[in-house]
Image 1 (cartoon, rainbow, N blue to C red):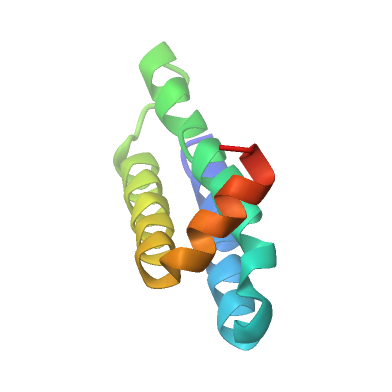
Image 2 (cartoon, rainbow, N blue to C red):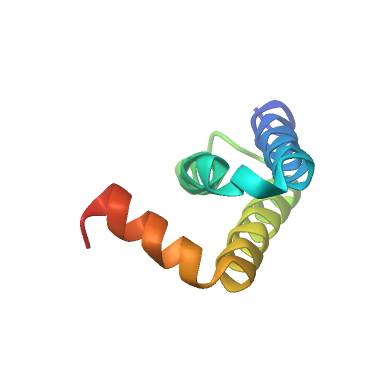
Length: 91
C-alpha cells in the first residue's frame, strides 16, 4: 500500500508524458487520461487519512508530480486544452 499504489500512479504519469512527447500532433487524446490519473492520485492521500497508509512521503510526492504535470499540460496546451474541455464536459 505504501509504495505500490503511488508507484503505479507515477508510472502512469510518466507513460502519459512519454506518449504526449512521442505523439505531439495528437496529444489532446491523452489529456483525459491525464485528468483521470490526477483524480486517482488522490487515492493514496485518502488512504493516508484513513490510516491505511503509514508512510505518506511517496503519496504526497505522487500528488505533487501529477498536479504539476496536469498544470504544465494546461498551460502549454492553452487554447486546445480549453477546446478539449468544452468538447468533453460541455462547459
